[in-house]
Image (spheres, rainbow over the protein chains, first blue to last red):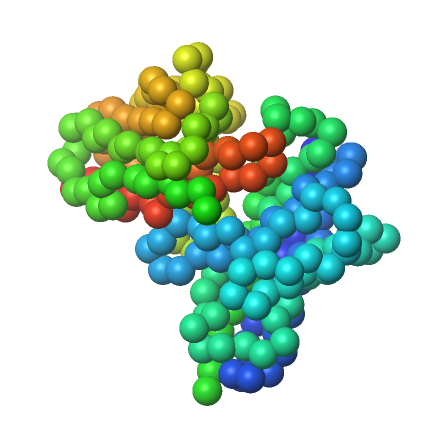
Length: 116
Length: 114
């Protein structure tokens, strides 16, 4: 079975400072990894994905994530946080080898709070 | 980018009535769509996987007779909550798979059953 862990319920950071939102995963095969962001009363917006290739993945709104196979991690990062980045962030994984039958498994979400 | 719409965005209904929620992929064809339920301050719970032209596959614990899913075309899936009760009040989100590994989400529907 596949799983995702987001160990922090909330991350607080001052505007202009770098931010990191942590995610670790477990799959039996090679992972497809995703980050989504959710604003209040909205659906999920796709930020970025890792399928294969470079371990550092760049996504929307200046976010990036680093795939670390040995640590089974896929932490979300941004060099300089904005107040408008405050939202709920979800990490998700799919098992590559399960093909199209595989489903996304989500972490429990991390609330990012960026303050002035 | 791929866009998924949901309608309505909010619905209030009386206990015992049925409510239909539509999910559409606007600029791509989706052979597979997903329906999720999200409780306040919680993650998304997958309810069912919907494949065009075939019966939906429900997750364990989800009542298929209560949550009717129809995927009539490559761009439309519907979720009908039958005989709704207050405990069905929730935020329902649909998602459509685009290509082999990308999944895009609708904006969600807030259902309140009074």
